[in-house]
Image 1 (cartoon, rainbow, N blue to C red):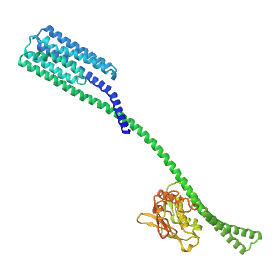
Image 2: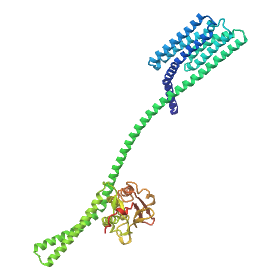
Image 3: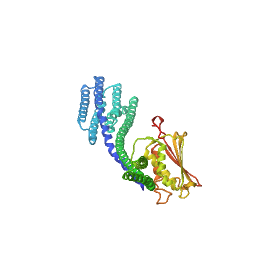
Image 4: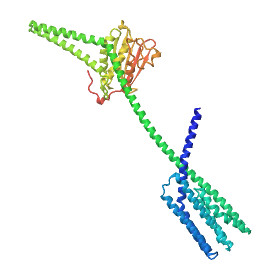
Length: 496
């Protein structure tokens, strides 16, 4: 049913096209007919004058002059008709009327030419009669060209112009005249066929031109519609990409909050320790000053207490700076020079309380060069990897387990390679491909959100690197991260 419907639609469209194009084709045919009208009438003036000169003195002058005058009068009328057509609007619906008028003029012209054998042929020699037949054949041949675009006009001229002469020759009884009559009849049929073929070819060419123009217009309209659709789809895609970027930012915030939640207790402990001895040292100094201790030993003790308080305050400042770096998730700036060793040490410090009851943290930095990226993003990647490594190892036996951070230049890729490996429970083989999916996790619901590794992969890809994982059946996993090495010429002095 669907195919039939499509075919029916195509048939209706073809019928509509035909109904729209055919009036234009007819109008074009008539326009071509009028376009040759001047040349055709000039031929009438010229050929009738030649006939009058050749037959002058061979037939009655009155009849000859009357015949020529009649031809010239008809030709003048047809020229006037051509002028009227040129001044008209040439609307397609008027083409039939203009075609009928010109056909009537062609018929009158053919009748006058056809009357020549009877008006002028009496008493003329056979040679002059053959000359007149030759002129009529030439006029028919010319009509095959000038009237080819409108067959009724051609037939209206050719039949009355050739039929009397053909009949006169065939009835002459002389073998030569009969032969000439037959040849003239055959010639008339031949030029009629040629005219019909030429007219059809011209009609098809005109029809094809209008159809091509119609097709071009349709294609232009379709191209405009397609361009509008492309713009619409592009706007929709841009909006979708904008929503995706917003979702990515929300995902990054959620993963960052999850990481902060995991290390919150340890950070609180890290801050509480220095704050405790900062507070106790400041109270000691205050007590000493209240007691009035001004001797050298008292001053030395107070200075030591103040130095210890300053060290504790500096430790708190470092922890706060690390948390600030971790919290800058929405910053999107140009890639910067990042000291990888310092960034890894900060990550290790922030997860120290998570790692300490589970494993020994090993660091292997083989003169790792700096990398190009955003410091907060680099820290987030390795903080997530270290937290995952810690959570893969149960608490209670830190001496039997280890978490290793190894960093070195990778000559094969020209990048910096960082490995975070652990001796924990490992990752099931069926989950290795899914661990990068958002919200997929192998951890207990209360311990993991499934956002960390997905965000790590996106961040590393955005920094121009890549990340891979290997997990052993016997336990333990290794995450390997490749990052772009910073150009040595742009590197600042190494941190100590």
